[in-house]
Length: 421
Image (cartoon, rainbow, N blue to C red; front, side, top):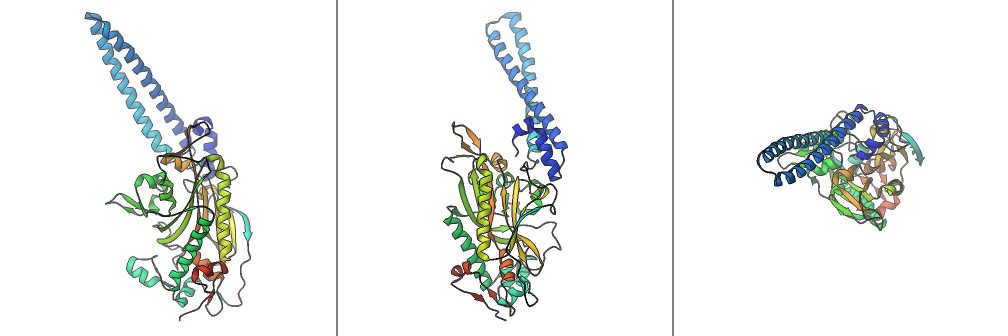
């Protein structure tokens, strides 16, 4: 949730953020009205309770008709207190419900607009030029015996698959390389739960506007995670962290599940957009003043991984309307996909400021020992989709694929993947 103090002290900043995202500005005035009513009800209830206390003292020393009159006054005061408390409850619930629907405030400098309004920050590498017509990743996988889409669909439905043989080995090699880099850079490696409680999923901002993307197990009231960001964000829920030695940094390895609602007809070929995939995700808890520096650090680690797989990519500053609920700023790294002759997202890193931690009550103590809300950030180190960029950019004319040098130690030293059919 956004900081209520910002709403009260700088409502124009909230309006500007809503405009940049293409969201309703009127929500700001509704929240201000509810907040005012709520605060008035609290003040009125406090005042009436104080009057009740004083009246109670007077009743104790009164007798006869005077006592009867004071008791009648007390009865009236009790009804007024009850009404004020009820108004407080109602306005607080209405405020909280609406407050949770407001997305995070975008950082200054984030491009306004939607999905196509991003700003390209840089290009790294040059798209390869082939002396032959490049195969797409599905054709390459079928030749290598690396993927079985048909049996995946038979077992689980469309957009499910089996990684087979060298395909399974390649994914494990990639994720192990990501895990190794994470631990080398001081992140604590975690294998996280795939099922989380509703309050954790809601706390990270993946319900509400994004609930159609999430698989829910209604009988158990649990949700399948679409990223290990969710359990990692909840790891320190309702805790006060010691950040005196710096941020707490984690890397979560998990299977991820997404319904891909509304994406029918898009990227149905192969493994670019699927319902289940594996991922290594970085996650950071830090002081709010350290968040922007941490964001750049996460982006640097993502680019370090991309350099290891030796593919051309670009970095984009995602537009406000495409940030998602929790992010205040998001950088995407998009790799070149030869068969599509375009760049496709491989990684994202998001600065969520205090938005998630406020919902999940993750705090730290400032220099005066007072509890303050922490900031959270996340960033992807590797996913199943990376196989697409590796295979297509490193393919040879006969359907073989050169293994990037940095990946070879994680694949038993193998330098070349050769077709089995």
